Amino acid sequence: MSRRSRSPEHLPRPQKRQKLDNLTSESFKNGVFLAPMVRSGALPTRLFALKHGATMVWSPEIVDKAILHSKREVDPVTGVVSYNGVSRAIFTTHPIEKPHLIYQIGSANPELAVQAARTVMQDVSGIDLNCGCPKPFSTHSGMGAALLTDPDTLCAILTALRKAMPEEITVSAKIRLLPSQEETLKLVERICGTGISCLTVHCRTRNMRDREKAMVERLREIVEFVEGLGKGIAVVENGDCQGWEDAKRVRTVTGAHSVMIARAAEANPTCFSDKPLVDLDKTLVPSYFRLSKYLDNYWGLTKFCVAQFKGDRVNTKKADSTKIRQTLSQSKGYDAMTDYVGEWTGEDEMKQIIDAIETDPPRLRRMYLPASASVSASASTNGAVTKPVLANENSAAATVFSLEDDAAYATPQSTQNPEPPSSGAPFLPKDFQSKDPLPPKADPLTPTPTVSV
Ligand SMILES: Cc1cc2nc3c(=O)[nH]c(=O)nc-3n(C[C@H](O)[C@H](O)[C@H](O)COP(=O)(O)O)c2cc1C
Image (cartoon, rainbow, N blue to C red; front, side, top):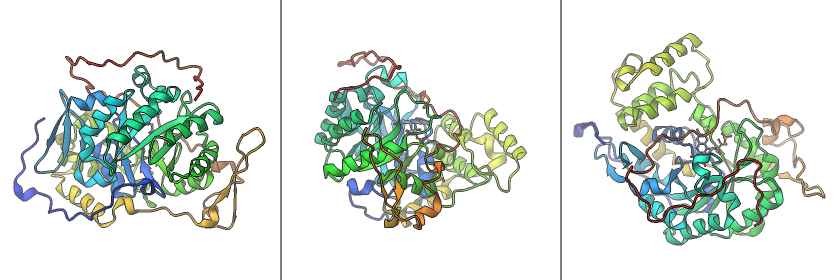
């Protein structure tokens, strides 16, 4: 990996970081998080999300074996830590995000998961296990959503991680719903027995497309069930949240401790703010290029992420955006964007991010809902959860939306094809021979397999 040399006077000013306590399950409560997203959850996107209101950020899923064979290098000027694979970085991070960063592992093997976690643990605050990716590249070797129907392996991985990680590193899991609520609760109970601090529930089943409405109405019973276990584990809702304001709706409807956002943040990483940036082509995009160049972010990745941005247009014309997008699609490197962005080093952009994170440490940001906005869910005799009602219809949260209105449950307009793409990153060296090959598993995608837990 070649990095541009920079003179010492370009060093960012010495960082006076506020000391933050280690993460606990409480740290995962009352927050709004950036979801793990292969490719779209790149380092510059995570830093902009933290600058603009995200409480914590998840790394993209990285398969256990991929990181084991990487080489850790630190850029002495920018501080960027790169885990380099054969041809490019598999994972990059910056120390400024460490207190707020959860690293997501793709694994089907407790030993490999532990080795992967040990490889990166000095640079992250928590380890998350992906138990929800429905794509064949993940499920074919028993990873991702395949773990939902293999609870023994799923729980063995979480237990091994908890045992191997020092106390200051949290262990968490991200799952999808199972077809029935009963089997979901059984699985959740087992997962909660492994010592995790946080459980994220993507409120769709494995076979649901992301354009289908997330079944957020099923989450309240799960939250109450986890709270009933008395372990203090945080339950995070994921699915269809559009941003900071919308997270209030999601939390009020579901009772979830926190909310995690993927596609809306992919389209606008500043959606975590109560005032997200608009006119992105004039605001976020130039800053994103500057920061990405400074961090030496792989150009193809920067280009991909910028191509996903879609914010509200207030003072810009569609024709201007089209021109910028055309330039971007034909560009082969940062220099091609100079006419649009101007001459830049990106150092100022990084300083602003560091200032923002140090002045207002993301993890300490809290979304407290008014107590009067608490909801009571009623379960029907067949176990189906009916719509909750607001305890006080005059509460502040009630002014945001009305639960009488189906809009509270509606999937907001989807932006683009939400299927996680393959990162294209070289997961393994070409000559890699596993001593402990993962067993191939049958992976029928339809119908969704049921599970006996
Ligand atoms: C581009 C993209 C990449 C994703 N990569 C991951 C991933 O690496 N790990 C994971 O657990 N989920 C991944 N997901 C799923 C999201 O984290 C999230 O569960 C899903 O998009 C639903 O949330 P949303 O409605 O806010 O988009 C990805 C989604 C997208 C759109």
